Length: 363
Image (cartoon, rainbow, N blue to C red; front, side, top):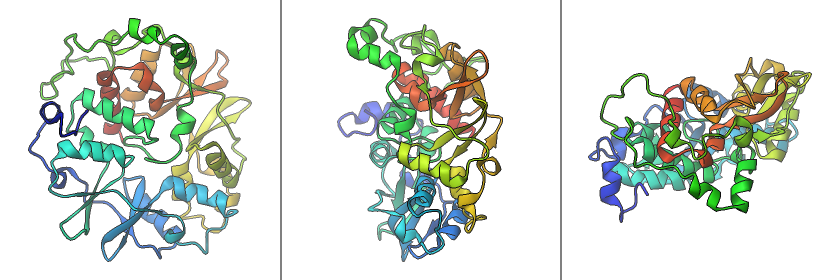
């Protein structure tokens, strides 16, 4: 596993530059706040940040984290009125920190344990930067990125995307028919195993990739016959454009998810995420609960047929930098949601890592 002391030589071989430290890859353009910051100000800071979370500090020492998902679901917990709340009411305590001079080979495990939210501190414990999967993904081989992504998916993190470390993965990673079949017959995955012994242009991260290179090859799919319907989350909770933001966040909280498809007559017309709700707090602090989803949602979501081959979905996700697709039937009605986390059981580490790297590039 990347980052363990026992496998140090193997881990270093998967790094583009093993000599780098956390200080050399961390982000310094992050935003932070203190525990007394009003919720609307925290939402405004999140909007200015490219991260899905804010570090909470006291005298520059990190004491907690506030996430987009936490801001969005707080709207449900407090009946739509957040005007009297501060970050102290929502933040999670005991953030995971890492010293600036730590070699990046050890930062990978630390990041996975932290759910994708790692705070870099100096010798005095003062916050100097943040590390997310996006920073480390550019330094790892595709196979190592895939393993990191799989660990984060198992721990409800989402590399390079909103809501890292929040409960949304419970929505996006419900058991699929293919997984149920493998549980009943464990040999099914073994006999159709992914072999990484075959030569592939992604194997050498420092070598230029020939063009065109598909995001996944047949060797990267555990079962090349799988379709989108075999991996997607079927029957997701939905709302209408006229639904209120409060109704949406109640679904986020009760279903433990971070995205809701918006439908009309059963057909997807948009998606609304916890990030959409959290950032809207900056402009709609007083009336956000009553604001219609139509005013907040992303319109014209990308769709894919539930009968499409799974490799076509991977191409669409990675090729366009998308984190999920709306799966539809032959009449265009929503039947499921396919997220990158749904790909984890169906791709080799290398194939998953290459797709995730492309998603992160478009972030």
